Amino acid sequence: MNHIHEHLKLVPVDKVDLHETFEPLRLEKTKSSIEADDFIRHPILVTAMQHGRYMVIDGVHRYTSLKALGCKKVPVQEIHETQYSISTWQHKVPFGVWWETLQQEHRLPWTTETRQEAPFITMCHGDTEQYLYTKDLGEAHFQVWEKVVASYSGCCSVERIAQGTYPCLSQQDVLMKYQPLSYKEIEAVVHKGETVPAGVTRFNISGRCLNLQVPLALLKQDDDVEQLRNWKQFLADKFANMRCYTEKVYLVEQ
Image (cartoon, rainbow, N blue to C red; front, side, top):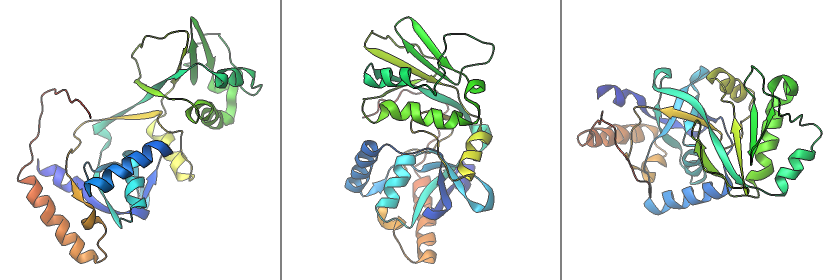
């Protein structure tokens, strides 16, 4: 387990970039939970970028909460490319006015035609599937993606469903499917100072560290030397009680 020690770090909040936006309601809930606990339970998962910067691949709401709570640094676990794959979340959304609005938007060339290329966006309602293809959208495909997700995420409850699973849908449900981006595409978005829509991109990560429980007091320390010393001692104490499970487990989240 020695390698995990090297990948757990304290990183200044201004050295971290987000690849997706956050959901305001979820952020408020996460921030309240962290503040009540007085610690951050799980480290933020990041990948290293150029110039000493890091990109969050899991933990947008935890990072944003810590920043809002006045933390100088955040605890991260650096994840390497062999530890993750990228997929997407499907969105199960109640049928509503938003669907009609998207249908009538003349800049969205919906089609029921199936092609060799995978559709960028698929909208399923009843027995009908409609598609938006990257080729038809041109350079505006990221803006279209943002527009489609925003059309329902601000007014409807959204149920996230893992890519490749087939949920039971009624006539009152719409299932939105999205084509995953590559890591290079996501990184390019971040380098431009932009983000992708919240709750769509999913990093499937192996080897994550759970239940580290880093105190907020440690993250808010002003003295960098003392903070680093306390961090190293904190990790040494935690590693004495760390276990690595290689078998499959089932976790019921509360």
